[in-house]
Length: 346
Length: 255
Image (cartoon, rainbow over all chains, first blue to last red; front, top):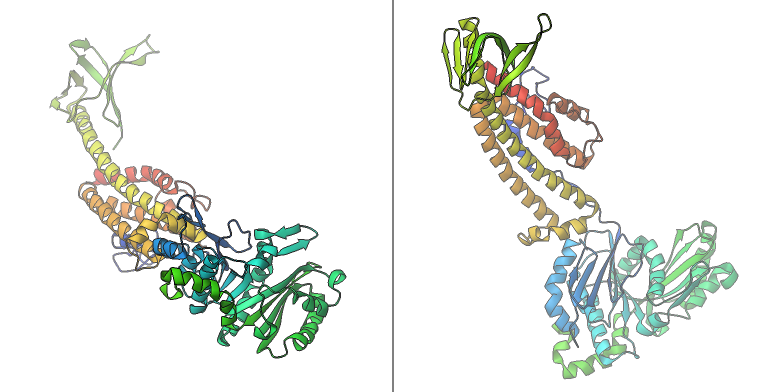
């Protein structure tokens, strides 16, 4: 700090306010090599997408990992050059280091919550999950292979999901068929399918991300990493009647075709007007007793919104290996002819 | 001491032409103007008949009231006047030299502060668009990947600025020898205070009255709108220039 010959320190000015002697700045100049520390604003939610170009989201940051004709790096894009006939292994070998660098630079670890929306049948999914650091408050919304997918897709999906499970990342899984058939309708925005339907499904998940992360982390402690989902978006009393009906109705369209006995936990997020909170809470108790009496954990989280319509999303915690078993055939068929595409090779 | 000089002449000879009377005027830059009286009695006005700037260093010869400089020979009303004119003509090179030294010192301060301003602009972007800013500075981080990108960028800027400060201080040291410690100290105060203004522009910290008062002492009139405005540093330095010149001349005269 600048000071006068009598040792009085002073922030600024030519004369010492204590003794009137001239202030000397000679010894203070080195302070100018330090720049003020700032706190960068990374936002509350960062979302990375793989295989979902231009997904619209309320997340403060949406980064896109995709393949294209040429490589491209920007603060929101990590595009790799396509490899003709390339497997997940080739993309990982070629781009893993670069993607880790990019993720560090764009501060994937800096937002409060992270969401990876990934099509696990895409070879880049393994690359993305390999590069993603193991972080708290991170969830994976994964489109997974099913029986309609090719063995190559099943192999890729199997490896990607195994990798996420190995890293302890909670997964909300949607089968490929479910994702293709996903359709939502709202009066103001009409029908939504494909990526638009995915965007719509993500809306309540991100809006209630704090509750969702909390529930997922609790399930992780119970050893439950994989979840499937069902949802009613823009629901109303006119269409579904009482809340119990709506809760029951959504169970007819799970995102993964598994047996009810596979479900270990059930959690419902409701985004609705305040006056309906009591009814939803009461109905959830009925719903749980009727359908998921043996659930290790069941909870409803309510988030108030001004809209007269409600969004309801339920996630079902599952035994981890039941899904992998369903696509193990395709995975192993590929490994037989290409042993390097083994899950241990990641 | 006056920054220009004007004396009535007894006679003058310029390029072999004789002027029976007239006036010699020398401006602050050392330019000499020979003027003749013209017009009717009572309404006479001065008309320049010759104007030139003697080559540096100015070679002046004085003999009593007679003074010769370049191709001009003048006879003044007294020997003391001739002596004063000679002294004044010898001053400009020193002033010019001082201005040159000051200009070099100012340039070194400007170079440092402008590079610091660029760093501050980067940090400012880091605050609002950290991802874009860091991607643009990827090469800085690449040199030191063990650090977090932001820490690496800060460390790199800090190192570069420390080097720039040393360079500036070395240059100011030269100025101190020729212009004296007061000018040196003023240049240091200027660099430091404008540096603090850059910080204030970044942090937006309240309580800038002290800063504005300090800038004012350096001849820089500034307000809240000036902080963080485009080319703030350059504009502040321009505003500080007249006060620096005045201080430099003052110190020279004292010397």
